[in-house]
Length: 95
Image (tube, rainbow, N blue to C red; front, top):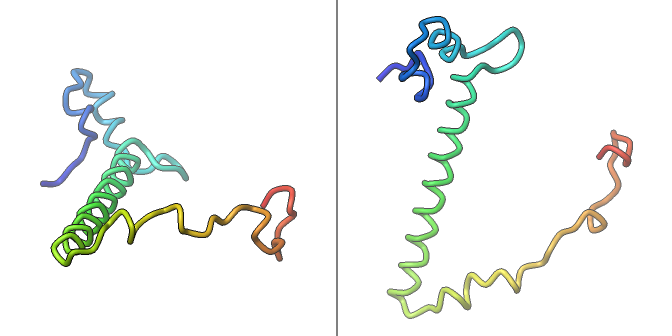
């Protein structure tokens, strides 16, 4: 289905407001419809990642592998800002 207004804009009674909510770009920055597109895209990508993670965990369970042991975050090395090298092209105050 082609969208020309945001989901909440579909219920708007004012034609001017409804048209405004269907704006993809306003001058140089995104309009409401562009923000909805980006948020929908992130939701889709994260949902796919969660489903993939669940498939991996289910596969481990079927193969007798303890997911809590294999996927434990406590064993992962934690990266903090001081672990990184200094920036090459940016003032460290801002990077």
